[in-house]
View 1 (cartoon, one colour):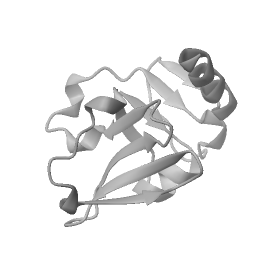
View 2 (cartoon, helix red, strand yellow; view 1 turned 90 degrees about the vertical axis):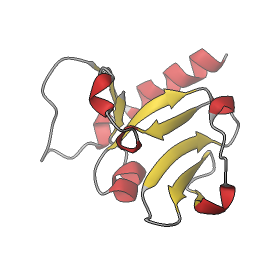
View 3 (tube, one colour; view 1 turned 60 degrees about the vertical axis):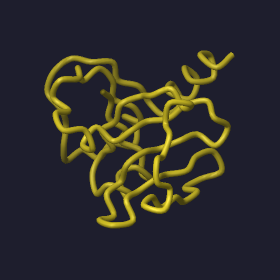
View 4 (cartoon, helix red, strand yellow; view 1 turned 135 degrees about the horizontal axis):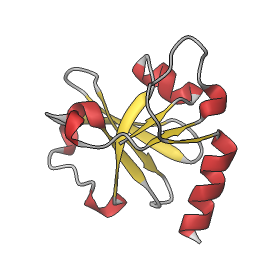
Length: 117
């Protein structure tokens, strides 16, 4: 599980976006009429529930990555909290206890580029 502190995620969720990385091809929507989608940037789109408005996932437009909201899972506590990204955009008025990998936005983008070859 990871937390994104970027400005867009914080505005989308009214806090940080806690998510689970998934293989983009595994993100299949059974009934697409219940999901809303919006292009949040030139690189990604975000999916939400049309019934209640809950944020559900983030997906790269190029198909390279996707993240599902950890809070959409019945028991998100079963996943280890391993990563925080966009630490350079995190407001100073909150923080998580514990040790984990923490990256700035530039470090995160560089790691994604290196992983995607």
